Length: 111
Image 1 (cartoon, one colour):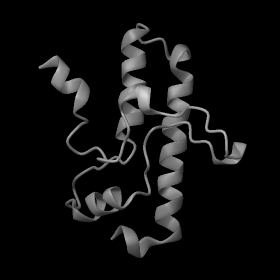
Image 2 (cartoon, rainbow, N blue to C red):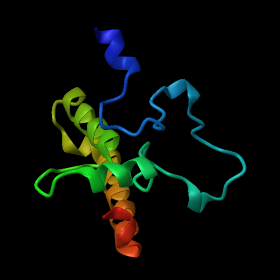
Image 3 (spheres, helix red, strand yellow):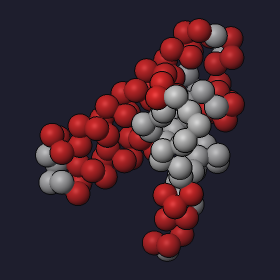
C-alpha cells in the first residue's frame, strides 16, 4: 500500500507531473536563469485547464497541489517550524501567481 502511494500521484494531479526525483533535471544546461521553475507543478497545462473548467462553481481546485503537499510535508518533518519551510511556501506562492496570471491573460481558456 505504501509503495503504491509513492508511485501513483494524487488523483487530481496532472499525469505529466514528474514525481520521481531521479528523473528530474534540477539544473538544465541549455536554459537561461529566467526560465527555471522552482516548483514541480505546471499550472498552465491543458489538464489543469480542463479540470478547472469541469469543476462545479462551489468546488475548489488547486493546480499547484504538488507544491502544497510538499509544503505540508516539510512542516510535518520540521515540527511545524515555518522558518524551515520558507522555500516551499515561496515555491507554492510562485506557482499560484503563475496560474492567476495565466487566467487573467486568457479567461476564455479557463471557463
